[in-house]
Image 1 (spheres, helix red, strand yellow):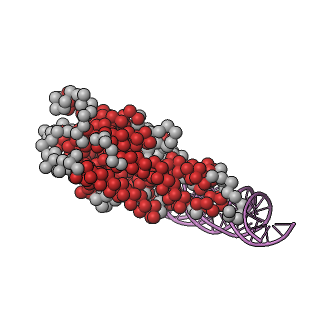
Image 2 (cartoon, rainbow over the protein chains, first blue to last red):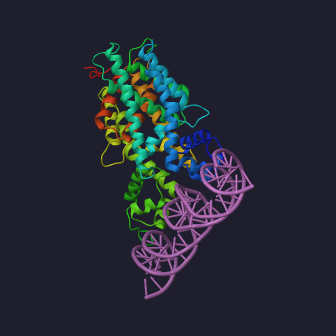
Image 3 (cartoon, rainbow over the protein chains, first blue to last red):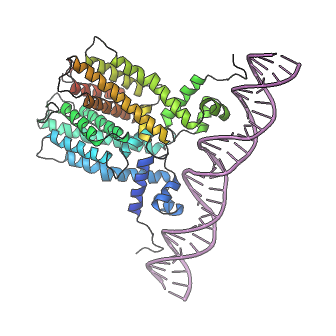
Length: 207
Length: 207
DNA sequence: TCAATTATGTACCGAACGGTACAAAATAAC
DNA sequence: GTTATTTTGTACCGTTCGGTACATAATTGA
């Protein structure tokens, strides 16, 4: 066992609270005092456990991607009996649930952070991390479409990278709409419309 | 003529510079000192001319919408010989030009601000103003589709509001992609793909 | 029991925050 | 030229910023 006084708070719970604060108020909009207040710990504890504000944000962002974004993406790319259109529908449905959830801040932390990044208020490393995350997601989606194409489930003329960019733009846009306070059912119908244009499906938006 | 010492700077130029600063760094990420420095004026002049930081931001946002967003939207909705798909293509092309312009900050100030809003870092009035602007844009787009529908240029089964939400989500998403540093040609192909799903067109993405 | 180690609480650091008081400078009306 | 009015520059306000020094409390190994 390690020596010394034991930490009086759950580090994982604290990170979760920090993530939600950044999610709600952004990097510049969240002060260290906000964090210590909400996490119920004092500054030395926070700095000892998480380094500094920037590192804490990085950790919160990684936690967000690992706990929210990655599982949904993994479910989408895991081989499945269902047709691609149906899996994408579920994927988008999950995303919409996430960005319009009543128990969490509206929108997507990743999208919010991407928009905030690039300026002087956000450290350069954070901006670059966000950029890589976006490109990685694109790669995963693109590979999925390539795979489907190689198995003959997509036309040979389909362009996986374009489809990935298109899907991401719709998802990003939906999370912005969610942040603007739009209702979940509006997001769902918009997503259904997007799918019907993306892929042939038995349940198109024409009815 | 009015009495008193004359203002030594161009208020319109100053507002333009302020707009670009907010566009680059956001509301929380832009300090009053950043503003006075970049605008080349001192604080009393700034406060005398624009009220305070919040009012200056509101003015900058209104300027952005009036100078960038509104003209494009007006061009789209102005009756035209061209088919709707072609006009939307031009509209999206203009938006992409705007959000990936080399002489301006990447992305869209409105989208960026919408994502930043909703938290404690952004005044409540600003959040509400952004929300109304989004709903107003939706109304304009929705009316356009309704009008096209009533003239028989869209199927009777088309849903204008859904189409408007869909178009906005794609445009919002594209501006997030632009903020992430994605290349203009990628945005264009994604937009073309989106149009081909939105409307029948003589130049679909299949080739 | 006692030393070594780690976390906590308080109190503070210099810097930057948004905003303003005040006097000097500039302009127009008289 | 004087006066009234407006802007400018400087210097400052109280507060909050991110971050830390330091003493104390708690825990384990010896």
